[in-house]
Image (tube, rainbow, N blue to C red; front, side):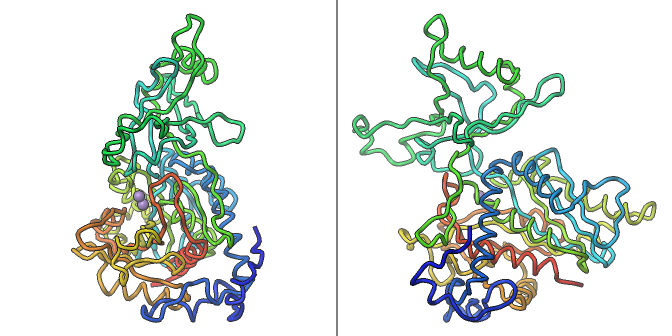
Length: 481
Ligand code: MN
Ligand code: MN
């Protein structure tokens, strides 16, 4: 949507016009004591640009709600922006644009640079899985007048938040004959949805003394998936199974080899009268993944080769061969090098390339919540609308100070507003993919943007931070040797 001058607020936004990007020279938080919201000083052109970007983002994540669906949508995106599938004989010429999919659950985009590959790659890494429920291998059962699914969980969730909201079922079932059946129910307005039913207030009087975590246990997060019994009059589950077989050609046993996720079915929406915020499921970390994709899609022939590396399974510890711990990354870089070097390829060239590479691991992080500011130490806490944040974890987990300084330099040159983040010591924390790459001898820094209600069914981001992250990503890709 176009920004429709929100009267009153717009008064402070006019002025300081610039041709490209945002007008942020005056508002970046380099001096943290004199720091203003990035919104202050934006002209209507900049507002229209960042509102349009937010619309594109919302449309993308409306469909891309799991790693599988993200990769599907990203392949369409790749086609639109002229990235070709990487092949064994793809030329490594400056400006060439490729993508490669790892087992349908991770995707990388590259634009080949002018400098030799072993001078290093500029990599932005982000993850495309989000916290959700998923089906057990034997999910379907009947209980009285209902059929339900047994579920497991992926990532950190607060159980009670997943009750009484519309859930969609997305994923795949793999059959013994090698075929794959896609299932996607609940996102279209006329689809049915699935709901985990909590007690109504009339019947929950025993709840009063219970702790929040005890009210709904993880094992109890089973959505209702059917209600009409079969002909014998008592087996709702059998009727649901018959429906699945008739509709998808799958048996009960086929559900063992399946990856079926239950995700919130809400559409992404603008939030607030001024539409400055985005409410959506799964912004962790598809906000960063989308910004990185958009940034790399705008490159022509950068000096250094650029890569957007988008992986699965961050929310469960970077596991499996599609997660950030996988050797796939170094194999992928080795493959690029051997395309260039042919029989001259040696492992030392790979090690050199990794050593010379720079990575920005981007992952959203909790911003100050207006209802609970006390969980932060405010001087080192990220605020929505104040730009990208440099994560300073301490305890051996931060980037080294010279790489932080180098990062500040390109952000300041591009007028990207930035702030810093350190959790309240000893009482908060979270992980990212960054550590998996620093252990491979790469230079790694963690950036993020602050988001409210991360890991809930409907998280909240600021449109201007999303746009600032895109601009930060673009500035990083354009850094040279
Ligand atoms: Mn994350
Ligand atoms: Mn997360």
